[in-house]
Image (spheres, rainbow, N blue to C red):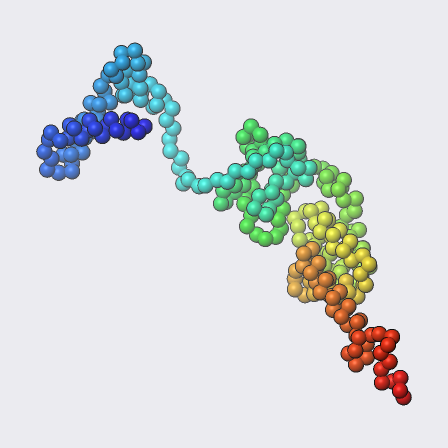
Length: 265
């Protein structure tokens, strides 16, 4: 391309220098004639099958030309997956987009624009399209048609259902029951919240029930019924309980060697 531009520039300027032009229209008309003559000129090499630039364009370039797209150009981010995971969701920008479970274990290509996410197979054939999500929650974007019957994967991964986690939470108290219920309702498909429920409830093992209820109550009041927020609230509630228990009457630390003023009465 650089050689062609150099060739055109040299010959065009050489021809134009010989004329006098009183307007831009005259200059443009002369330029068109010179360029047309250059393109129609046969190549010096008689064995060149292209014959001339015009002939080469008509024979090779024009048949391959396609109309310009009607829509405006948009950037696209590509992400390759060696295999689609067993939960048939592909991660992009903190969200998980579903693909038919029949493609599990196969390679995939995710193409993301500002407005949509396209998922193709390993041969770049389109499988499905999602509207791109920018909401912080829920993070899973799932099409019902992509899921196996009865959520086979979720049942294999989680032998318990939502009722089980609700019963477990109610054993701690009403605040914990409310928190778990909101977690279960926070996703389009309840099965997607089982991991969070299990993590929250397992976190409460060996923790006094009133401490658990205090942490759950703060989450419900703040409308932040999430695993990460509850973990922080539980740590704060446990820390306050430990500090309160470490002090005896009058604000002094509890210790056998501290007799207190009642000992002398």
